[in-house]
Length: 430
Image 1 (cartoon, helix red, strand yellow):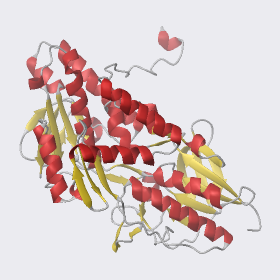
Image 2: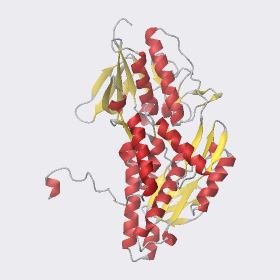
Image 3: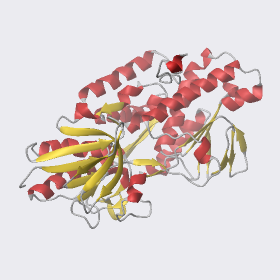
Image 4: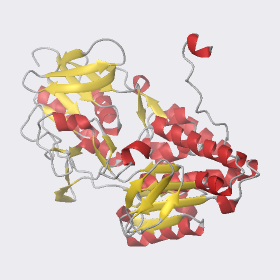
């Protein structure tokens, strides 16, 4: 390189953080500046969000500070507004102050995904999302508040409505969330003497014919039996027709009175992707080659949920939007970005997946590890062990292990922290 190049990584999730971290090792600081844009100064370790929502883990332990992991990368917190590919610039809106424009020589697009929405009446207004750490904390606070209000009510119908919890989406996020929340509420219910098990209702809804279809029919059926044995209602082959502030109408005709509706039915690429004018596939992800380059560009790369990278196991399809694929894409991408700047040889993305792991709480889980199915306590242990090893930094792993250890001998905290952060000025305290 004749002069110092600049590589911008848009997004600090699994793919973006891994890419920037590897680039620090591949590109000396006197040859390239690495810059990462992210809306927050931390990476959310999303596989642990359900346990954060249930209070098993401290929420802050699920967030990995970018500056602690990236020693030689410039971290800029803000929202990426636009990318100009001809001028090679990216516009960012920082958390405070005017918009800023950054020039780049190579750019990696890894903005992640958002919850996929459908034109269902009331969905946008009344559904809770479950993609971020703040949403996980909100859901936990909301569930605890519903228990408080139910305990205070003399109206049986109101109490039962507040104790009805509906989750839509029987994939990883939805299944783990409802399992963790149900386990949490079951362990703290004796603190609410006017709320009984007969008042509680847990409903998991999906249009699919089984839960966790990615695991295959055998493990999916095992997960189904575990959930139903605990009293969770599974409505398969069922969709949502309408959502209101205190009801949901299902396609099977049932009308549920409830106050909690969580939407986890699929993901869509970050809206930034749709503004770039780059080739996308049917689901809206950027079309990439096996080197993680965006189609038609030698200076633009993409990884993670927003990238349709060919699956080495079946090149006719794209890799699934999971953390383990995003991690490996980030490593491959970093190698190829460095190679494109230094004249090195690029390498193909060649990861085929280590397995699928699902934590169902209460010391139960299902997993497929290198093609071998496991379930029950062994599945739960394997899932937890993998997540502990995968979270960045040794200290984060120790914190998670401490949380797990404390959770064995203690019940979940029932302090509802929803009021925190609402008082910000002297005027607001009056």
